[in-house]
Length: 171
Image (spheres, rainbow, N blue to C red):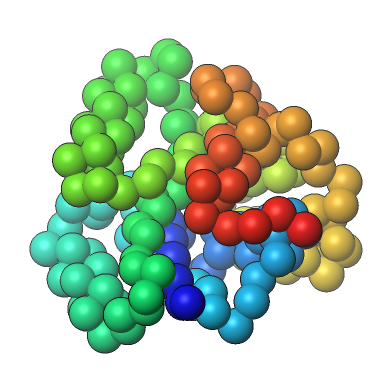
């Protein structure tokens, strides 16, 4: 029985930074069999979450590969300054509602994916290098499991394991 997981991530197709952290998390915590097909859809910024081209890409990937276990769509979004910027809070709430309406899962990284995995925000021009350094240095092993399974927004934390536990088997 197969299953497809589509991860919609904020990064661009060229940078692919978010996918590094997600891949490393999956490798550390889950058993991945040949029956699991994992694909990334690159948003190129969270404000593109509901763009027609993104929705068409999700639809195409879903129709193209029809596993017995179905397709799960997971949006992976940074909370940014949701706690101090009302506009960013509204944007985040709109994305959450969109995911609920579409039946998609929602993974959050507070403040952003680098803040969760490095403990600090990384300048934009350093993100690709830091993602590669994270992978090559096996830094995922330094990340406490507790920082990846929160239920509420707390800086340096995420709910990624809470969501993935619904769809993948732990090691």
